Image 1: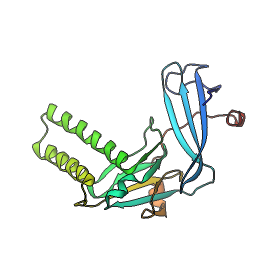
Image 2 (image 1 turned 90 degrees about the vertical axis):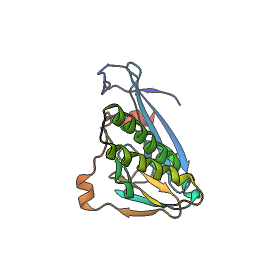
Image 3 (image 1 turned 60 degrees about the horizontal axis):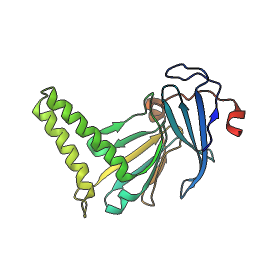
Length: 203
């Protein structure tokens, strides 16, 4: 992909003349045509990727109860405005200022949660946290690890909530719904992208 210069300062290091943009149009089965937009800074290495569907979408939630091993192979499109939840474990990842989009599968999303749990557990040991807190973290990790067994002993619910409607779990068992007004009021929308002139996207 060619990098197109963008006449805006880097939102992180404020360097001028160092920001570029790459776009790539692709077709994802069951999701449709989308444009992958990556904005990057050559000075500090900042990078932000997002996915924009060709057709406009409403704010929505995509939910999958993971109960079968084949669910782990389901494609996941997660934009930078998406909040990811594992309902039964009360785990949630909200989009922050450095949030970026990605295309993965359900197993990849679960692995991301497991990596964070391992990191937090190590930190808890280092800080002499309460053993009850450490045990809870270990139980969460075990529950997620068991999703890779066949059969899966305990199903869990993966939920994507996206105010921009750019995220989805691509499986026949996944359920789609519109976000409630309360959810829309509470959900963060992720990082603000630099403002581009329309000519930047057409080059």
